[in-house]
Length: 589
Image (cartoon, rainbow, N blue to C red; front, side):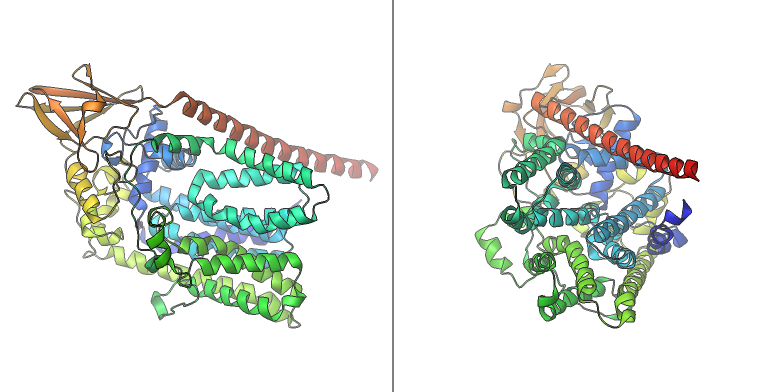
């Protein structure tokens, strides 16, 4: 039994994430970067809804309790999982340690699985798993709590399907696998799915060309697509419903500064991180593909070309300035071209390993030690960077906005001004303190009267209309998934700007009377003008999702339940088969 256990894999999965997190563990200091407050608000919302058994389409506890819909349009199912982890951890610091470990272990395991499935040795697969999980594709989770890092941690699961598509032979097992993997990516980030899908096309085209039973092959690809869609309905349908409103678009970025520097690495000593290693892998990919083209198998050539295309498209070698001028929507949708390069990291790393396997350098030391050395260097450089960031946020002079990797105009707190002052809240059992003491202005998905592009004036307006206004109101979360706002007024029939938004299907009841949303006015960032009465005003906020949206969510959750049940049943069935074989051999002996 113990001989079958891969102890190297177990030790690496146990040790490497702890090494990367060691500066955080030794100093008892949490990090929370550019996306941290946005995602921590979502996770706290999910945790409170689970704790109170009060599921709602609205964000009842977070985002200034302004009646916003955020969780339902941004990986809702996964957010509930993270919310459960937060309840289990009890403090934000423990939660950060737990989730960092899960994400980095996931990156190692998924890359190891993908690499072994395409024929790499266990040593290469394990080393590539360490390189990948310590690369920019995944390490953003420790510095900025970036959600795309989790999605990219499971992108390697797509690679075996590339080979399956290339071969033109798709059995039922491969059909279900592809559908589940795409749906799993959609649960984390729909944008990642949009970037990954073009990766499949060249391999699909070759598969159609070589498939003996072309109609069967095409039919099973269609079934995989249907399965992926059904499993993703819980993310697609709420997003489609909310987008029936006029919304503030995500921040529009200048794309050229957001390109990947993978072909121009800067190694400046102690402040450098593991990016140098992935740059080495990129140059190895380019050089070895050209030098050993004739020795490579056809599938490896396909994989190399696709990997190189993904790396190059995300860099400034592509005229992104011209593209964003002609297609301005890219600035809000894609935002950062380097996301394309990051998505190609997994394939890049695997192809380098496959080239080494197929070329087989005569020097065994070079073949065996190259991945190990690169993995060790990558982890050490990343850990060094984490230590530098921990040191920076421990400095008493580090402003709150700088510790959050934001600008002074995008962070507001009435009583916390340095990141050191924030640290005790990570260790406090009252997890709401971290959320309610600091506001990170995030106007994403706000319903407005006319299309608005997110830029600095939008952030300023959000801060003045919501972040600086919501605390004096009394917010009561009701047990039926609704929320009540209360405030006092000394003047009757005055139009008051209330830090609250309303979507088309939002229902408002002011002092016992329904509010006609068609007659209500908003300011530029969606805050409502409410005609208040003298004395105590009570405003009840509810939301009624469309029936087809609710049905789609239940359908998706039910489909996921069947998939998980099927996977667990299959696992027990395999174990039972091995047990029966063992019993037969024992009886013969």
